[in-house]
Image (spheres, rainbow over the protein chains, first blue to last red):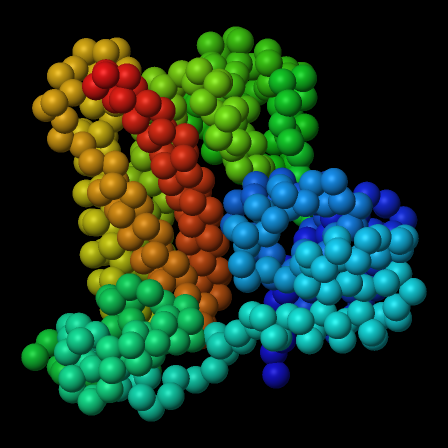
Length: 197
Length: 237
């Protein structure tokens, strides 16, 4: 089974701690991609990257709780983990989703990350085959039917059709109607003649 | 921030070093119409000699290096809009006369070799897509950009405006979506055995184009449009 790629931002001022920590994570069997940031604001600078997890030294946010909460709000799907090696107020740590201690073993830390991550947002949808229902929706889509029309045809709610469409796009990686049509033909879900008539 | 080594470009840096770090900056120089023989010149020198607004150069080249522009910086930088438009026009030439035709040619060759119906359909998909792109680029070259220029020279009656920034953004999204679809069809679903060299050239060209279009949209939507809207608002007042 393929593992989903996890982008992790690490905000840790100490070079020694960062190097040790990243080495440990990169050598694990998980597919982690690590990015070191020097401050929280850099999170909003990234062009295309989405971070599933931000691991940070709580000192970074200690006197900036309000600006931290503001940034956190902009990343509702991100998990925030503290990297703790000195004493912090429990109220500060409560602002984060979890905390790992510098004395935890590699196994413990990876276990922690995996638990939090799968709970929040690992949708390894893109490698699965389409379900029969999704194929049906796909075929109707290529014939030019709207979500409403498909819902009526299949006797399901529009909401369900929309969710099938979302899965279709996630699984195939294809968004446009002409692209989906090409996909459906190449997989023999529809024949070219069907499409033309 | 690093994983891939990235440089934040500053005026005192040597252009040659920057190109060695990120060769895709050559394309940026093409769009700015700067000679490749950069000698030992720094960014500051090359901008001065070529009479290029240094702020535009810095913001664009850092975008090529992966740094998103900061809104406050943009608004206070007093960017040369005419230079921005020249840059974008030159990149349109690259799309129209270089990259898209190159991709078209690869697909065409693939079809000639393989004669498969899947490849034929890719060809049809691409040709439809390419004409959409040409139409959009034409719209920008003939309607949007001249309008921006007139606006910049304050030589326009704002009430008679035919340009819509909303429509502009929808076009971009569409162009990028279909390109990504084409890439994913080839990478995930349609197998092309044989013709390994051609196949790799085709995909590399698609990746290169995708990255360039991505930067292009950011320049137009995040940098140029807010500047245009600012002028429009001033005129309306």
